[in-house]
Amino acid sequence: MYPVYRDAYGQTDVSFGYKINDTIKVTLEGINITDEETTGYTIAPAFPTMYEFSGRRFSLGLRGSF
Image (cartoon, rainbow, N blue to C red; front, side, top):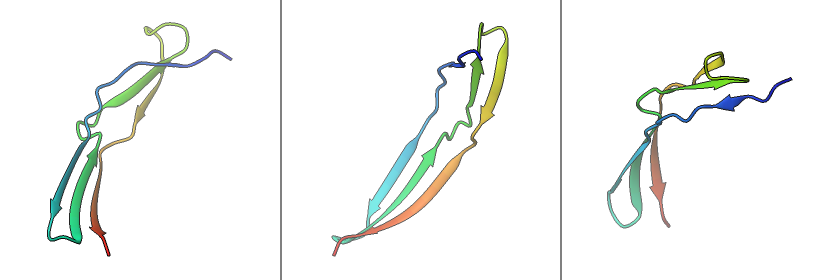
């Protein structure tokens, strides 16, 4: 019925990579490592309608060039 507005939040992401040799690289990535929440409201921020918690996400990757 009413539009939902979302407040800005300070999500922190990181990415690290290490080149093992000319063809192989290992990467570690983290999304929302500070575990921030997202809030939303319809009419005024004093009346929040939702809290979203997406949590922290990490991934470990291996890249190869051939």
